[in-house]
Length: 81
Image (tube, rainbow, N blue to C red):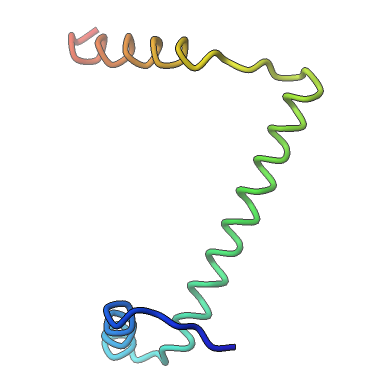
């Protein structure tokens, strides 16, 4: 498989390969494997949360309520409380 990258990304990859003593294809393989693992874990977590919502085990929060709580928390931190 071939992957096309920008000249800037190719330069960064080659610079990293030179400084680390690893082949560029090894670096790409490791990076892609890590990315796919993280993506799979995120997908699994999202599926689980969706199942929790659909089953009623978890109740959704109103977005405005969440922002209100975050603003209050931030204000308490700034005021030292």
